[in-house]
Amino acid sequence: MANLSIANGHPRGLMTLFFSEMWERFCYYGMRTLLTLFLVKSLMKGDAEASMMYGAYTALIYAAPVLGGKLADEYLGYRYAIMLGAVLMAIGEFLILGGNEMFLLLGMGALIVGNGYFKANISTIVGKLYNDDDPRRDSGFTIFYIGINVGALLATTLVAYVGETYGFNYGFGLAGLGMLSGLLIFWTGRENYAAAPGLDIREAGMKPLWGLKTYQVISIGSLLLIPLCYVLILKNTFQMDLGGSEFTFPLMTVLLVSLFVYVAGSLIKAGIAEGPKYRDRMIALVIFMVINVIFWACFEQAGTSLTLFADRNVDREIFGWMMPASMTQFFNPFFIVVLGSVFTVMWVKLDKIGKNPSIPIKFSLGIFQLGLGFLVTIIGLQFVDANNMVPLLTLVVLYLLHTSGELFLSPIGLSMVTKLAPKAIAGTAMGGWFLSFAIANYAGGLIATLTGGHGGGETASNAEGLLQYTHIFSTIGYVLVAFAILIAVLAKPLNKLMHGVR
Image (cartoon, rainbow, N blue to C red; front, top):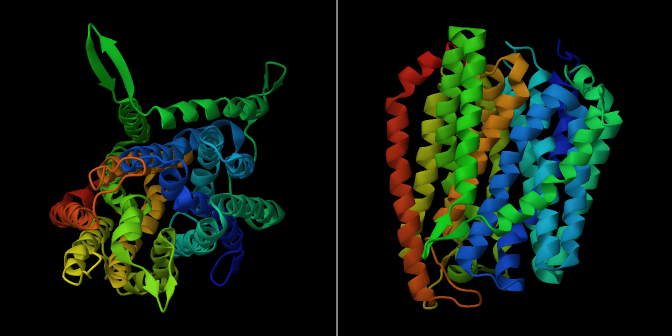
């Protein structure tokens, strides 16, 4: 039974998890905000290579919770997994301070493994604070989602400004200190969420293995995944010479697609074991995972093509002050924080009067707004200046639409997973949900390569670059609007598969 002691209408542990996740996101987004510019400007990577490294890194960040959720379910318990993840993420940020490509890749590897333990499992605890039929669940996840974006807002202002003004290392170091703050809050506030089930190390995790306990062996073994991540980021494709012909093997693509097939099969198999209702619900979850991939592959242009677009083709001067290009990413979390509370109240009030849209319709509306955001660049092109710069307002409106679309989809998706999945595989299902983000981020890196493709230190002319960016962004916008209409048409059969989950 979840802890029913409440503060401000919600379980007391929600605020502890809110601030823990806030600082973890400060750590992650702080690094992510600076990554593409660090690769292009400090390590002199070309746009395409930087986008693919960024895509591979963020893909692995979101794939790792598949393993982290499963190990927490079966061996580690949620509390120990989250603490292990926090320590590894802090270590990862501080490794990056080495300043060269080797230390960057090792740090990225530690961040990936640590995030795998932290991200899926803290969301799972949030779900377990509420009873299954608790109407506060969607509202609670939206509050939790605001915490995520407060962390992102702090990262995309403080870390972005410090990193671009004083040096990238100062930005990465600040992000690492944020992660240590999150770990401290999670540990000192452990009594607040203590009644949530599944926190303790599992019985299987306490069994002896190779002279240690199983959970200790898993902890040590996790370190071996760091060099694997190193290789996958650096070599996301593998080339072989076959009888004089060179063959490029898409290593990351095959890995992610194989993982998706395995996880989808595992979820549906677990659903079948629970009966026809859960079988259908798991089929619905897999479909929503595919929809999620489409949304986030386009949304995640924020860290790559949209940041480079801001650097090269957006007039960022405000009353004589030049906003750093990486800092333009702050508009998204800023609008989340501003609008999040509005959406929290809105879902509750709509539910009370029976007008709350179904989950498929919310997803459709979210993707529609994402598409409109990209189409704003066509309007921005009408106000281009003599230096081939579009007004900053172009990005402001784009991110406003992207953010409102995100609020229709992302926190609702987290809540949906906890409601659709059988309790026995809650962590695995959440890990599967984050796998869809992994595929999306890698696909986003591939999309970003279409917008520029400049070599290390070389750029196209501002005029050519602006036309290329606008062409790609508007094409994405039109495709998304059409996809949103398709989801709306299919809303009724999707609702049927969900068996009453709203």
